[in-house]
Length: 71
Image (cartoon, one colour):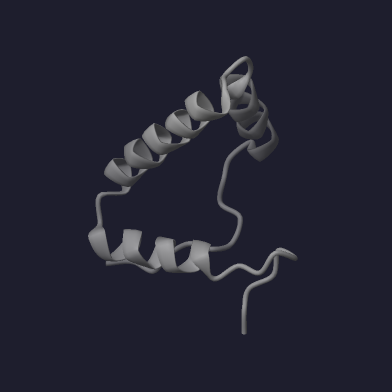
């Protein structure tokens, strides 16, 4: 299994972010939360590697409010 990529690796990040925001336009908070949950599950299925998903969960949880990684 390969290591989790934590450095920027997204093609056209600004374009993706704009598309993500557009997907949420007009949704209620509950609908937006449901969209995020479905997207997470679709992307997790695309990754498919359970160990990599566990590392991603740990990495996502290990972020301080200022945006830096905890030491």
